[in-house]
Image (cartoon, rainbow, N blue to C red; front, side, top):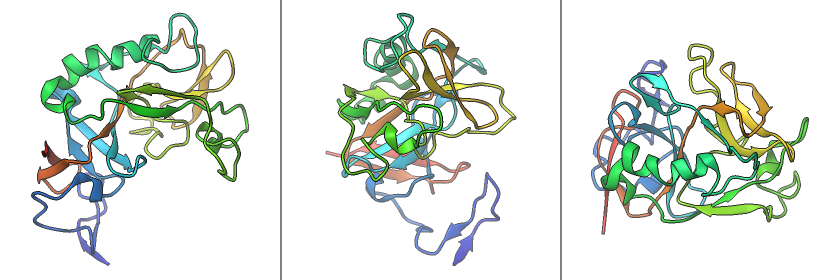
Length: 233
């Protein structure tokens, strides 16, 4: 049952059950994929809930790639041409260093889990997106190709990994997922996924896991009124 909203991007439909009016003190881990959060600094402070993949916390991703003075920044995935994300690759070094100090700062950085497992399964041409996390398409077991880092990116095919604003913003951005031993998956401005050399420069959409104690102190979770969050004890 629709109880509020008009179905537009800025005022989406709210359904009976998620239209709570007093969410102060509610754990963010109880909320829904797609809802918006105020997180980070200045022009890069809008994020969306992806999932609760680790069971107790909340995975979020920047609503659009990072900007500087209104322009999307770009980064090589790795200048040494590694297709496997880690804290030491070019983009991993940026996300686990400068991003945390300049784009997020300590108020928000303290809300992030210190270490998250990021899945690095390879998805070749025509292969299922499920292989980005699992060893097979029936999802019987997790891939052994992983890395640990505080900040990462979304996998190919993961919820919210598609184009954030199709066509109107002419930028590509990286995913975590290797396409082969020489190329990495990225997402184009038309929402399609391609593969590029890791030395290529593309946009950056950080993904992070928030601690289970993060709670809501304001907002309704829409784009025009995102949740305001705080770290509990």
